[in-house]
Image (tube, rainbow, N blue to C red):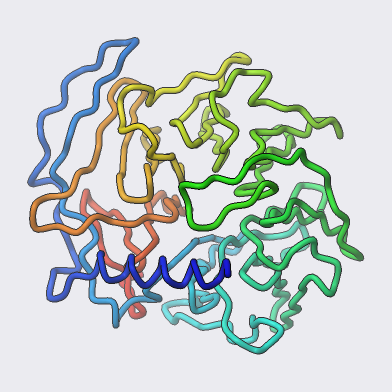
Length: 358
């Protein structure tokens, strides 16, 4: 039933967001409105009429790109509804050995790299590891808590942490062990949800693990589980992601806004500035220290610690549906989701197809 709902949602989104015959390269500079300096306590939103995300679906890496990752060797990986792709030089390779137990393609939701250099992928039928040419697929029959994996992260000790629709488990190289988090509530505003859903697992620069779940935000310093939502007064238990910027400040995307965590306090920087009920998703930072984030997958914002700017659609424009924003080792910002992959270059959004440009 979960997979059926997800398939229907994808089809509807593709219909709503398709746009034929448009340019692949869109200048986002021509429609920039003047930005006013924000009141220090109550930053206002400035609207920029950026033209975004027109693409020809047939030429895309995939019609739905869920995630992007760059490994320690600089290789780019794309997780899509058609499985995993690796950029080898200027050639995009489909990793066709990552399949479900029935042999079908899987949707890759997150990618990470282990301490030993193995690439780990979380997907709709478990997890897979890639070690050179060797691919191993793991599912519930191998000890996973659930086959429906939403997040995966490798810690500095070499353990692989896996967040699923039914909770968390950890792989130590030998076996999968369940890791207990409190039970939360189902988010009735989204198509796929559960009381034990874990959206994101993140390890910060100090080695502390963070769990973003439907029961709240939890940290795990020194093997002690802390309910950060309760401790800092975050006004929702629906947490999507934790992100750390170049100044070691943590940002938390939630159902009710984007929080900054600083000096043991949580501040909702979007409160009263964006439409209520539009949960915050992916977060990234550009080379200039601006924080980019997505609201409701359709609305793209940039925050420079003083100004909150929305990159807004035009009349002849389809709204983007963004799963992830990512900054690569060359300081380029990527935007992936329904409609494929895009990269920002010289203040332009460039559609990256199967043939690049890389």
